[in-house]
Every structure is written in structure tokens, then in C-alpha cells.
Length: 101
Image (cartoon, rainbow, N blue to C red):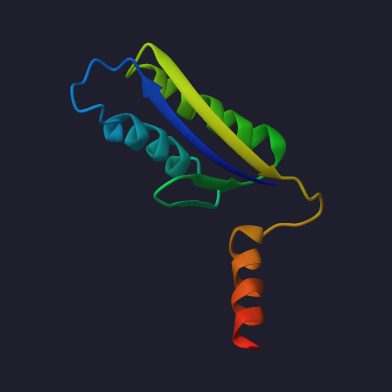
């Protein structure tokens, strides 16, 4: 499965409302998990089976929680049993289709 998620604290007490330190803590956990992942400006996408992906997301959410009094978590999942390598495979198929134009 692929899960894209965004996690951020609120109630940080920072005047600039910056959350980059908290997000860095979450992304560090994802990268250290060893699961295939990709981070962009809005989301981190992680690939693996249900239990391992959601364990990583839970730990990343817990890490962000230390930076504020509340946590916002947004998830989007693509659950497709029997498939792996889709983190890059979906993009590769898109690029191939664009190249056909």
C-alpha cells in the first residue's frame, strides 16, 4: 500500500507559526524506517504493508506531538494488494504515457 500523509502540530507557541522542526522529526522517523518513501512540499508518501506503514505514521505523529498541544494528521491511501514498487512505478507509467504524446 501507499499512504501519503501530512502531520503538523498546532499550539506551538511560536510567533512565526513555523513547524519545520516538528516535520523534520516526523520525516526522520519515516526515513529511518527503511520503507520506500518520498517527501515533497506538502506530503510524505510511504510504501509497505498495512501494519508497518501505520506503525511508522503513528511514531511520526507521536514525535510531532511533542512540539505542540495538538496534532493535525491528513492521510490518503492506495491499497492495492499484491503490488509493490508503486512509489516509483506509478510515476514511471505516467511519464511513459506523457512521452507518447
